[in-house]
Amino acid sequence: MTSLLQHHCRVAVNRERVTGRRDFLRGVSLAGLAAGTLSWTDLLSLEAAELQKRGMSCILLWMQGGPSQFETFDPKPGHANGGETKAIATNVSGIKIAETYSNLAKVMNDVALVRSVTSKEGSHPRATFLLHSGYLPVASVKYPSLGAIVAHELADKAAELSSFVRIGARRSGSDGGILGNQYDPFDMASANAPPTNTKPATDTSRYERRLGLLGQLESDFATQSPDEVADHQKLYDRAAKMILSPQMKAFDLSSEKDAMRDAYGRNEFGAGCLLARRLVESKVPFVEVTLDGWDTHADNFAKTTELGKKADQGMAQLIVDLKQRGMLDSTLVIWMGEFGRTPKINARGGRDHYPRAFNMALAGGGIRGGQVIGKTDAAGDDVADRPVSVPDLFQTFCKSLKIDASKENTSSIGRPIKIVDGGKPINELFS
Image (cartoon, rainbow, N blue to C red; front, top):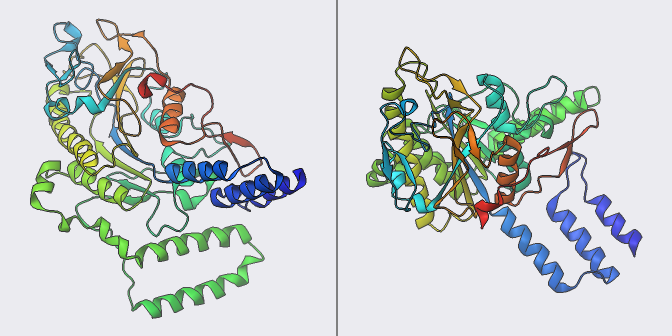
């Protein structure tokens, strides 16, 4: 019986060096039943856990440039470092945030703040890579981003839409990394217009015949460059499935009522948050929405007020909307940037890069809202309690999304790479 179990485990690993979840569960379950080590109750529990995991999704609200903690969720009114930013009360007693975030203040019972994030990376490219992947960039390994990991672990392989959509920004490099280009994001410059080049230039049957001809032509090269041809075919198959799908209507915001558009905010970020909700509703497991402009080396207070109003309205309405639709528990919402800003205000009225102590926010995905993790000292110079590292954050994301953070994927040279290397989840967030 042991050999039967080993056989089913082996056949569940496909040629992409990735365990197929359905095949693995089916194989292990049948083998376990045959061996008498699994009951039907165990089988049902395994399948229920898999269905629950498959239903999870994540929305990353990325604040490109490094948002000031003082002007967001860790204000220091009354201290010279706090500048002119005032703090307001929220609907949770004892929690105060910057005055710009009046809408989030009303839903703070669903939001958890982490005020003690710390890292050593003050360079935009390196810190952005770190906060997207949990790893520092190196030449020898292409680490996948969080979006690629979530898509890889949670996406339904039969899904017609892309499993990773990024709205409002485009970064160089391969987010899929060692997982393959099929996990690179589908990039959208704007949420206010449906994606371009997503309709066949001819009728569907003729388009499908052209795809078949392309496959035949490429088969001649498959013996010479099998990996390159396979990757190319995957991209075409993925794109063809997507653009022919009736689910493409999820990208069209024109079907939303004016009241809903107004609630999210008539700006690119608000539209991105609304589109993120629509995509998650259509079973897209990971959506990233970018709000750029937080690199406030000058005129910090005016810029963070303008940006904060957009971030506040879009994020607050997203949380309200997800909750009203019964989707908040299965959707992890992350608000963060690559680092914070300096406590001292510079001569240009700005704040510079500061990774030593900054903040981020979480909602949904099993996170208990209405709490603050960690704190900085009175001046905001250092973490005074409960430091949280970037690996800690990624362990927390994985726990929320029911992803095994210790799982290893294999690089092109056979090196095993854990989803998260080190760190511990912030367990207080779930209690």
